Image 1 (cartoon, rainbow, N blue to C red):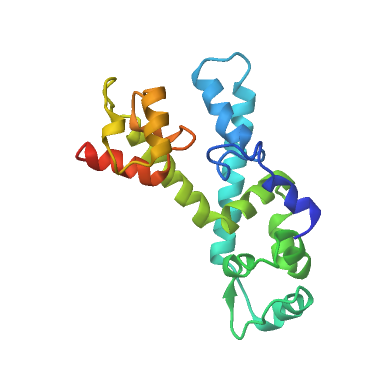
Image 2 (cartoon, helix red, strand yellow):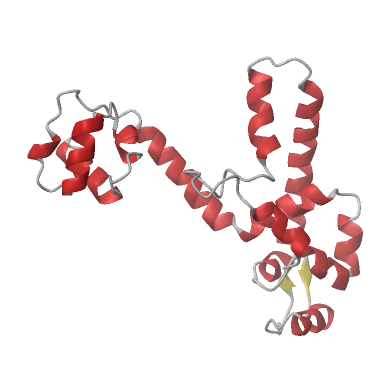
Length: 207
């Protein structure tokens, strides 16, 4: 993938809890609606841009799911990027999933795709590309966010005796006893408390 299409994949920080969701390229999509709900002045214009960007991204992704390319159209390009040829018509979506393929070079090889993409800005095209290539990872992380949200509702008593739970790791017992988290969600974010320790706590609580 060329340098231009790699740029959006950079994250704000390697320490971010959900690095696939908290990307630079989707910051406006995530934060502008929040500012709008809070009543920030002058944000309506930005909201219109966000709506347009979402619509553009959806249109691009839909095109890739529906449009196909045959061997005579795409095999020359696939050979150039050292990717296996196709033997029949294949959805552009599946071609783009290949690690050697990116939208910009694929469009250069397919005039119909180039014509379709011409009205869209670069940001929308790159956002659609990330959405397609990382769809499985994004969905998995969204499910993790939902799970963690549910864990925030599982309360821990202030006088919970962590040291008595021998199935917890020694480090987890020590950290939990010192920090006294109020919920399972808070406990899961303490350094030294592993997912296995969280599972032990949930079992102990009867969850």
